[in-house]
Amino acid sequence: MLLAMDITPIARTSVSDEVLARIVDEILSGRLAPGDALPGERDLAERFGVNRHAVREALKGVRQAGLVHIAQGGKTRVLNWRESAGLDVLSAVAAAGVVPPLLLLRDVTQMRRIVAADAARLCAERASDAQRTAVSELAQGYPDGGFAADTAFWTAVIDGAGNLAYRLALNTLLAGMRGVGEQVFRSLGLDGELLDRQAHLDLARHIADGDGDAAHDLTSALLGGIVATLDGLASDAVTNP
Image (cartoon, rainbow, N blue to C red; front, side, top):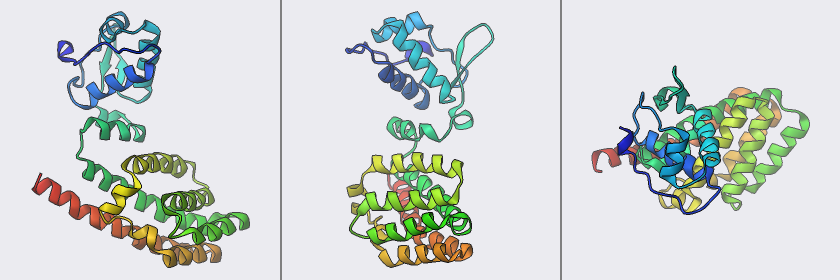
């Protein structure tokens, strides 16, 4: 298994981030399977053509991502990333091509819809007056503000919800969506939410009024369109690869 690793020397120095990316790609792609042992630091440093410090820092990142663990005897062994990793590996999963891009994007938007709908409800119930005002003002940014306005609006909604887990999940989801790019969203017809100014104004009003149920339902409907579109696109991609 270890001999199958596609390792070539890295030209630059101080490249622990690139070493990290290479090892993560080996794991996510399946070239290193669950239970396989990684080579030792010295061996990896020689194979990558970098110093051991860069390898050591990269391995810390791989462990923090939940992709490997230190087994009995000191061997660093690969874990099943579907069971052990967190949301922070989403971009690496996309880069490795483990999941078709449209399927991954569909899954991200499904999660975003659920998180955003509950966050809108919580924001209506918990937000301070200042936070409600901020949401109302940011709703004015549609549709001309594009992704930037959308990011600011939903960040304000989730901050008003007062849920730290939702806030950190939002960071990951937004990073993944930015990786796809606004032009790709528009070319696939996924920008309906960004163009719906009235829905965001209505949502801000529900939040200002403290109507959690109405805020939840409107958010679910607003984001449901992009989920339905991606469902269709993803199904077509699987049927007609």
